Image (cartoon, rainbow, N blue to C red):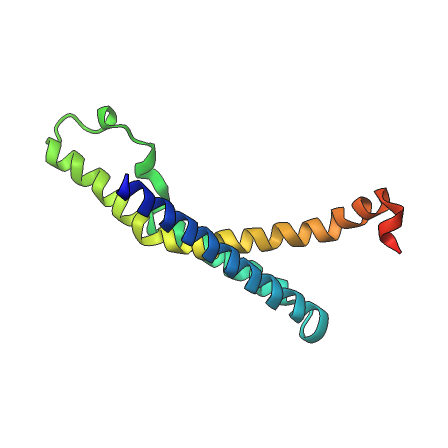
Length: 132
């Protein structure tokens, strides 16, 4: 019970940190677009693309995630099979912070921007009293 509570608190802390990073990225994005430099979104796109490319290359295209133990060569010993999956877990453990703390906040930032650009106007139009 104590271990699950600690894990839950850790996950809540990660979620709070992701939201904080997302808020900071949104703030930086909106201030840059409005006051300083309009094409800042190209920098965000480049950062997101570079992070996604890094994760895909570092994890070797995630090819090990699609194998089952039975699909590995029969000539391999159990230790080799264990090492095969342990390396995949190690690669994921190394890139998980990039996914959770960089890629996810950038996606949330883009989702919020799309929501504001394309859906905010029609939503406000549904409630005429709010537009004033």
